[in-house]
Image (tube, rainbow over all chains, first blue to last red; front, side):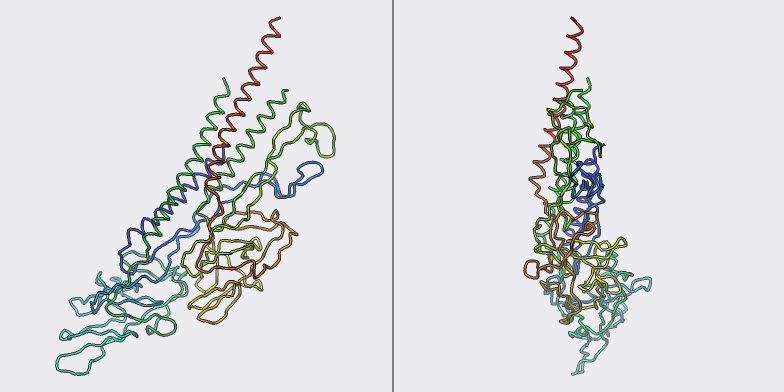
Length: 262
Length: 251
């Protein structure tokens, strides 16, 4: 059968994945700390029908031969860790990381996960937790009577207590940095987990050794650009369409072939 | 047998091959660094179809007709559009040249500069093949702010760590596509370093496939209609042969 049928089908499958990824990006335009993904593609195998250098006539050689490619395939879906823009909220427990690094949180099962979404709250045990209730690691407990919570650029958390002039330190937020953040496993709920590909976290004080600083009263918005995604969506849709056109042509050719026998 | 029939058959066969190649190009519109393939079809006189070493015509066609044969595929190495992606490990090549990667089959070349870092900090392609530095070595980078300059120098937090190896295959016909966005060079083809002025790298950008979608669509129409014509020609030849048989036999 005509190879074009199958090559075009791989093209349509690739574009389908492309559109899936774009749709997820668009669905998370307003998700705090969300990092967009991008599908990367590669060409599939090439079938060699005439070896380069083979004799094309008695006296000449075919310099490049005949090689027919068999379509495309997805190579990777990569997360792009560009900084999102900052949204000023004024809420003292809204924290953004300006630069590299992740907040560490302890999940229900005790495993550490990493997030850039710094919309923290205080739970019934006075701990600083994420919107899902996972406590920050190292855990920080805010005294009930505290009047004001302040977070410094280096992650030091201080509170003012009634009747005391000087603020007192109650803990320090530490951030984790990865050699290859694109290798983190996205778990949903704004959380990512360490993998072999991401490398082990390098934990330390925000602002040191290339880690970003902490900005209080701001949230990091998602780094999805709606315009860029919409353009990618148009391109993906058209590419899908043109591949289906190639299938049409192959089909039409087979139909014509079937008709020559009367 | 009738030479016209062979001519029409050869035309329809090369149309199928052209469709295969066009479909592959169109399937790769989103493959970064992809280079379009083209099929060259040439006409041949029957005396070219000789058995190697022999002189007698290989195909029994009348000397007046020529047939079309797919001659060779060529890789169009023209520059693709460079699109900004913002990802620091996306590197596009502006100008001729390739990155060099180490694969189990030996050295391969690619223009798909969508690199990743492995856990140990090794710079690899999307398929996980290490990217070569200018000495042919693997590139290992520490964590930090990565900057890549126009000539392939890689800087991490302001310190120069490595230089990307960039090569040019001087004979464009020696560039053989292998899939996976990789190319091989034909044995003995000269592989030289690139000119630092002519070839420049653009960090945070991706080179798109150099496919002209409009031309691809025109090719599709052309192939479909051409194929129909060849089929019609075959029917005509068939009809005339049939008529000849019936009328001659009717005498």
